[in-house]
Length: 260
Ligand SMILES: Nc1ncnc2c1ncn2[C@@H]1O[C@H](COP(=O)(O)OP(=O)(O)OP(=O)(O)O)[C@@H](O)[C@H]1O
Ligand SMILES: [Mg+2]
Image (cartoon, rainbow, N blue to C red; front, side, top):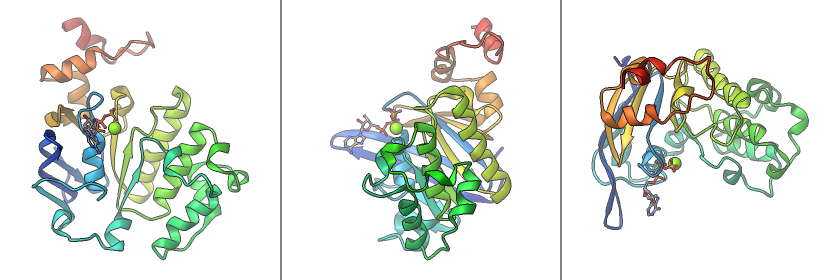
């Protein structure tokens, strides 16, 4: 079950684009210091939901509490509120100004929120060599770019980090590094995190709780263990059945697969 107190509570969030309902009565909770996974097929509404939390999209009804503040009731989010929720975008490279050196983008994030800018500590924390600070976004590898995106988010000292597919463009070894980095931030700073991913196995040993979204609705939620090993809904079962067994040594899903 979810740990209290909560950092975020979404209640009955709806969203409509034109005539189509993209989110339908979405309920989701994140406890302070928890890592929560949000999974579901492409186009089911994950990024839209994340953008609503980050204040980049409006919602159609519902409540969204950050601690005890209803974000949807705020006419315009204050700087302080904006600082508290940081998002790592699905396309990390595209979220950086191509004309700015990495260090300048990171500095801008700190300055905007009147926070001290400590590049050495920041680069060290995310495992990025300080030699890269004067590079432009196109001069970084995918893994380096993803680290820079995490650095920019944590430079703002957020209470909640939303990571939208933080590893989908990366190879397996770098993926682990990035996810371990998020785990580390939680351990050291009690950071709360919502991780959106297609990659269900990557949540193993990382997320405390997982929500499964299908066609704009949460169809199932449970501890990561429950969702991966004992899914109840046919949609979740299908998602798990679709995971390729690339590594024959990984028997995580074999038990489930042989039973179905
Ligand atoms: N600004 C927009 N205007 C109209 N439709 C949109 C807009 N943004 C998203 N959509 C639609 O809303 C639906 C949900 O999109 P969303 O990006 O939230 O999906 P997703 O779950 O993040 O998918 P993926 O896993 O591919 O990133 C899709 O059908 C998409 O085409
Ligand atoms: Mg998306």
